[in-house]
Image (cartoon, rainbow, N blue to C red; front, top):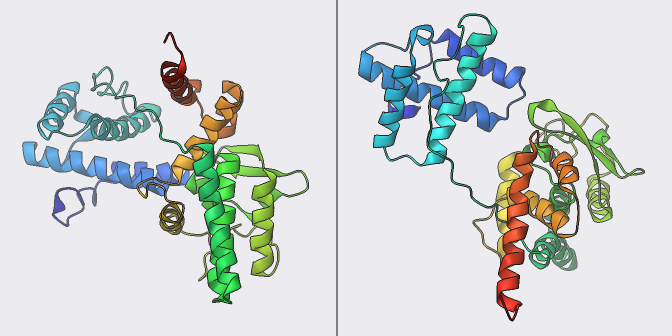
Amino acid sequence: MPGGTGIDPLERDEDASEFLRRLQAEAGASPYTVRNYRQALGEFSLWHQGQRQQPPPWLQLSRADFRAYLRFLGHQRLGRAAVMLRFSALRSFYRQFVRAGRLAASPLHDIALPRRERRLPQFLTATQTEALLNAPRDEWLALKARAADPSAAIHSLRDAAVLELIYSCGLRISEVCGLRAGDVDGESRLARVRGKGRKERQLPLGRPAWVALSQYWAAMGGVPAPDLPAFPRESDATLPIYPRIIQSRFKHYLAAAGLDPALTPHKLRHSFATHLLDRGADLRSVQELLGHERLATTQVYTHVTTARLRKAYDAAHPRA
């Protein structure tokens, strides 16, 4: 827990506990969001107890309290993103009080936060992406040639299907893990995906992704029942694969393809969006494919493609 005391500062905080429960059960937030918000509320609670010698009386706090907390975070030399995450959690927390009529307005309203630095998303080139997507299949062929443990070969086929699906549909890890066998229609080559807030979207499925998934299911003994995970755990086929397994295997294939091992599976999603825009896809379509609520979230990819075009122009044009 925050502060390293081993004590949960939210243990007896009914409002915070109810907020976190609703966040997961009703808002469909990912486990990572729930964990981060719990930590943010816990850190504020510890700070308040240290400053005021009592747990925070949430309904009585004022804008001045949160400005004082903001100054405290500034003295801790936290980055902009870390500060914004903490205040995002606090603002979401206070929205529940306003919606329930327990507060007329949030005390965090109009508190100016440090501007977020705009960082362009990292992505793989088309050649790098192809090398990465080929790595699991190359491993499978090598395992097959030396008659290795069949379970290891199945892992390679599973990983090939996972990577193909992420890139084919621009999926988040949580969306891959949440995919059920019945969500994939091989005849129409469509996948039904549940994104943030449990919002569903239908996505076209590329042929390589469908072939890779079919090969994996065939090696597993057949297509799973529609309500079962598309990628089950080894220990229990009724439960989906752990995200950390995908992350670990992703790093394994980055190394095999000679790519930066610091990259994450989310970079395949970035690559999906960047490659579509590079090849003429319109921004609104890419927004819908990614499941972004706001077009501004998708527009960051136009900066990526524009920056690359500018670099190519400056390097090649005789009068640049």
